[in-house]
Length: 379
Length: 251
Image 1: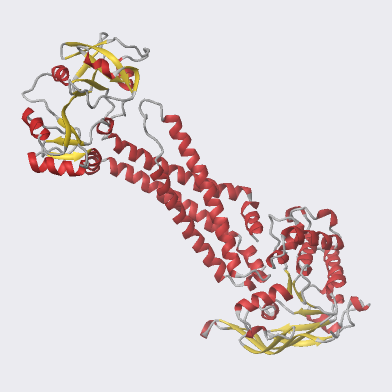
Image 2 (image 1 turned 90 degrees about the vertical axis):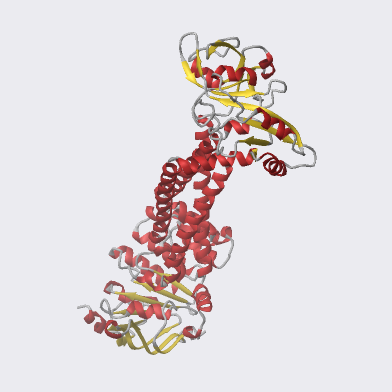
């Protein structure tokens, strides 16, 4: 009877494709919106995650997220280094200077100042040049998106100059830095130079990045640093979530996306669920005839579940394919770079679709189970 | 099995729907018999209880009171699971609106009762093709119902009712949606193929044109059998006439 169920499902092509595409578009909308939302939030911590050398971040106790920094004292670095379990700890500067091209094009940038001796925190994904060349005087590494923003329509080229706070700097590398939350160029320089590119303040030490020694977990180390220095210490992962939570709590992003996702969820699932339910209702006469002919309820339930699961699987696969294609197309565009289809969003959407199809199936099954087979005699 | 043995026996069968002010007495003490090897017609005006009666006989509805024996079984005493099995094994249905599955071919539609009995699809369809050929539809076995005429669809429905060789065939207005020629053809086939010494056929109809096929005609009115006649043994027995009292019902 499985064959009969599938033929009933696919017999009316218009209804069948309507059902499949309702689920496909619901899947696409949910996966698309939740993935964009999650990726945008992840962007708030892009520069933290790009510093792959660090396991632990130390900052002022009042610092809540990456953008919000209060300079530490140079002596804080010494104190952190003195905490047992610290393998190494170096300083990291973060500032937002203005970079200007010879042609006068300018942009506010994210400038990350790296420890002069170790260059810990340097971008590891390079498209051109080398981060080791940051040891050259007045050198910077810029990300590709920043380069394109400052030199629109021009080919990637090393050796070009920028002016930052009356300093002429030379591009020695082009990185593939993760896109920041705000679409600003991301630049890396040595700490001693970066502070000059911004303009001197009394203190410039934004963060101390550290790594745990053998036998000490980053989490244990953060506790030790906090206890030993009264500074705030977070693991990379914790700091990332701090940033995400801050934006969730203090911006309208979750509300905007939440509404979109809710609308996608409600409209998509209602349309998909209702379409399937109506499909069963329209086939009640056929189910009634089967019931009269001696097809047991359990078998009819199996037929409905088979219809529901096959249409859900096909719709979900199509929708996921559409979402994957969308992200594949946008992956390498500057504005949307790094925004990918997250497996968690696919799983979450799958659960939603499963829930909707289950509810629609249960409603359909109920209609079939309560159907009196004698109804088939009513013309 | 004797040709005149009782296949269906109803004694004072009652059936009502609803309660209190909304109660409707559909069957009000029906006495009815259908014999093996015969076409038993149930006739009467709309709303008189014919469909309710065949629904009760076929095990699709529970009676409210009375004694009912179908093929020697007290259908009402069966559990719902047993009743489903009983229907699957013993009852064939022909519906007024054919109720063919539109997405299945003629042969596949006919195969449905066999598929329900877990017979492999290939075998079921092969058997269906043979039966359809016997009913004159050998060239249309792979056609969808929408491409068949009303008469052809009803022949497919007839094949579906017979494919699993049931001992009771219940037909609800099998010719109502057909023109005279098609209706006659369907009744010819029904008479030739369904009537069998080990099978009883009950036909509910309004169609006076087909009364000549009946071995017995039970006239219902207001939930009761008001008259039973055995005109002349039906066409299968070689007679073509229609008993005048039945004609009068529709006059």
